[in-house]
Length: 163
Image 1 (cartoon, rainbow, N blue to C red):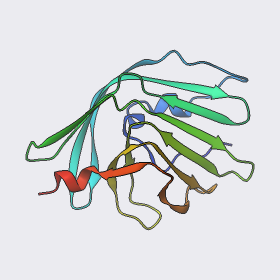
Image 2: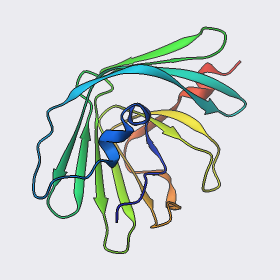
Image 3: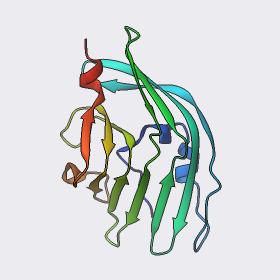
């Protein structure tokens, strides 16, 4: 059984149904559908509003794998003072490998905006990543081996928007 992803890309909250819907067997190429809306997430000590516009698609692959694609995604992160940062083309790919022991290996490639909930000993946050970053969640959703690993770069969006 697939477990919930404890750390997810910000727009995935807007399209949760697409992520948890039963996937057809074999390879299913997604036809990306529109994703548009705003929601609030926490940063350490304050909240921000994420506004997303673009498309999302989930591709089911053989071998207990999925890809989540975000073509043409634009994300704006705004703090309570109205200061904002916009990421146009935050259209990386998220690769999820469901392992035999029930854990998940998640790898984000390209430009991605990732939200991190308060869990597993690290604070909440919003991060913009480029390149390749990975994390592993055990079958209970607990992080194993570090918040982000890999050769990619990580920018703390909350720190950039802090008072």
